[in-house]
Amino acid sequence: MTAENKHLKKNTHERLIVVFSILLAVVVVAVSAYFAVLKIGGNKLRKKLNPDSAKLPVSGDESLPDDADAYYNGAAYNYNDKLVNILIIGVDRLQPGASKKHQADALFLVSLNSENKSVNVVSISRNTIANVDSYDINGDYYATSKQQLCLAYTYGSDDKQSSELTVKAVSGFLYGIPISGYYTIFMNSLKDIVDSVGGVPVSISENMTAVNPAFKSGADITLTGSNVLPYLRYRGDSNAPRLERQKSFIKSFTVQAKKAVLKDLTLPIKMYNKLSSNTVTNVDATSAAYLASEALKAGFDFRGVEGVSGSDGAYETFTADETQLYELLLDVFYIKQ
Image 1 (cartoon, rainbow, N blue to C red):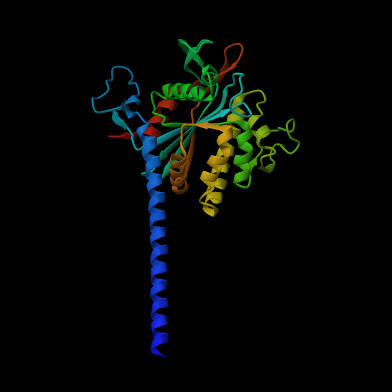
Image 2: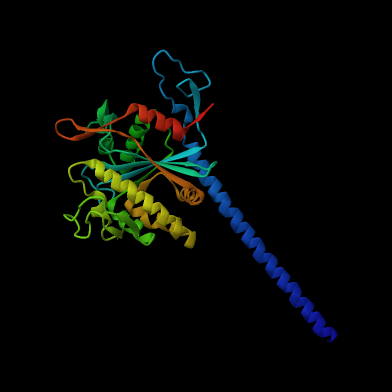
């Protein structure tokens, strides 16, 4: 090999090293930026929390210790301030911005614990009787009274305020559990949500052929954008079966979503942007990216507030079982001292 060839080979080798070094630096910077964005998103959500609001009442002659947020059966508890809680609100309307008042048809509180890699999804009946703030037609507050939780949404002047009022009512019902964000979904967005993960398989537990001939009791079907709304909205004689269907849908959707995101890690942000016209939220893109990345690594547990369905003479009501609610809150949101 001539000296000239050796020199060319050396230069080529050096150029490859330089190019490789540049590419490696770009990758390192990109990965660092990605995780920095995730950290920023997580910090934003936690800053919105007020853990001091979480206080469970004590019963009988018991008193709450100074260093505790709850006291139950001889044990003291503290609120787990590592949690991030997001309220999912489903509204019975096609899209945001309609002038006619509508209600919150579905309520799910999603609690992310990034330390033990877990997500608890707590379902709450729309008909739950709780303290709800009422406002007159001018938007002025005039009373707080026992109403269905779903009605909190009707008092807002727009979907943002309606979502905030719903968050306040749900947090109050849960004895001050802090909620850092809300994601309000309208019916048009459900079609894209389902199709984005390739469909959601479910088992039909009741006869719903009145809304779709394929919805026969015992049938296994895959929900798509074309048939998901009748499945989730069908009410029948009571809201209870619909709530169970919504829970089953979310369980199955979670499995499908994890699979879809593993195939395309950019899917959460793509969907966040695509759904922006049919959702209302105070969770920004960086926070959404953080939630998606943490949820991908987490195990999911699905819980529900139990109670008794009834009627106020005109509308269906749901009265929570206070003991079960208390123990559920301790299990999900508190740490035993």
